[in-house]
Length: 493
Image (cartoon, one colour):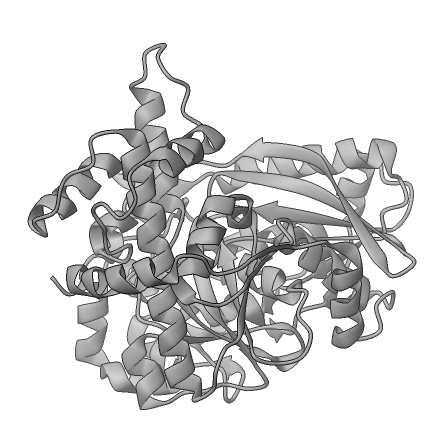
C-alpha cells in the first residue's frame, strides 16, 4: 500500500498524479495530463464530463503500464458543479459550468423565498451566484434538467467516483460547497433543498473524506489492464480541501491561501464559526479533513490573468508568445503601483475580453488604463496582493486572533512575484509550497484511508518531510501601506 493515484481536475486541465509513500515521505509524479475546457451549447456553458472520464481512464491505463501495484485512486475537482442522473443512471443533459449565465438573478430570487440571514445561519457559506443552491433554483426555474426526471444528483468528483466504483456518495468537503449543507448538523439542509426545488431523495448519502467506496469495477479493471484490486477512495473531493490538508503547518497562528484559478484564503478550525460578523465579511464554513472546518473567503484569483493570456494568444498572429513566465517577467519590469482593480467585481467572473474589462474598470474609477500586457499583469497581481491583505485583516477580526504567517499552496505559488507582493502587502512572512498541494493531499488522504498514514498529525508530518517550501519576507511595506487606502477606495466605487 505505497502507491496512490490522484486525479486532480481543474478549470483548464486534468492530471493523473502518482504518489509513492516511503519512509514517511511522499514523492509525486505526473503520469498523464489532459485538457479540460467548457463548451457553449445552445447558449449555455457546459463541461464535457464524458470526455473527461474517458481521459481519466486513458490516464489510469497509462499509469498501470509502469505502476501495476497501485493501491487506490481518488478524484478531486472544483466545487459547486454537479450532474443529474435519470433512469438507469443515464446523464440528464450536460453538466453546467458555474460560470454560465443561468444563475443570473437567482440569489435575489432565493432571498424572496428564504431570508439571507437564515441561509447563512443554516450553512455558514459565503454568498456567491455560482453556488450550487442557486444552480438548483435555476434548474427548478427551467434552466436545466427537470427534477421530476431526476433519480440522483452527484457533484462532479462523485460522479467520477460512481463511474469508477459503482457507488454513489457525497463526500462532505464537496457537499459543503453547495450552500445546502449544514456544518452544525453535518447533514443536507432540508429547508434550503425544498425552497430551491431540489428533492432531498435524489441527494446521495454523505460520507467523510477518506471513505473507501469499493474496488474498481471489474469491467474497468479489465479495460485498463489492472492486475490487482484497486480501491476507489473519496479523498477530500474538493480540490481546495485536498490542498489545505497538505499545508505544511506546525503550531498555531497561521492562515492559508490556496492560489490558482481561485484564491481561497482562510484558517483551519476545529468546528464551524457562524456569526453575524463572519456573514457580513463574507466568510464561508466548508468541511475539511477529520471534522475540521475551512473558514475562508473565495476571491477571484489568477483566473483574471488566465483569461488575459487566452485573449492575447487568440490575437497574437505570430507575434509575441504569451505564457505565464513571460507575462510575469513583463509585470516585474512594469512601473509599480499603477491602476488597481477590485478582483471581486462581478465582471471579472465571466470569461472573455478580460483586458477590456480591466480597462473599463479603470476608466470607470478614473484611473490610467494599462496599455501593455505587463502593465495589465502588474495591475492584477498588485490588486490581488492588496486583496489578500484586506482579507487577512478581516479574518483576524472574524476570529478575534492574530495571524503571524501565511502559507500559500497550489499552482499560484509558482509565481514568485505574486508571493513577494503578498508578503509586502500583508507585512508578514509567506511560506510558499507545496505547488502540488492538491495532488499531495489527495494521495495522503487515500493513504490514510488504507491505513498507511496513522492520523491527521502524521499526515501533516509527512507533508513537512516531503516538501521544501520557499520563504518570502516583507519588503517596502511603507509603499504598500500607502497604496492600500487607494485600493480600498477603488473597491468601494
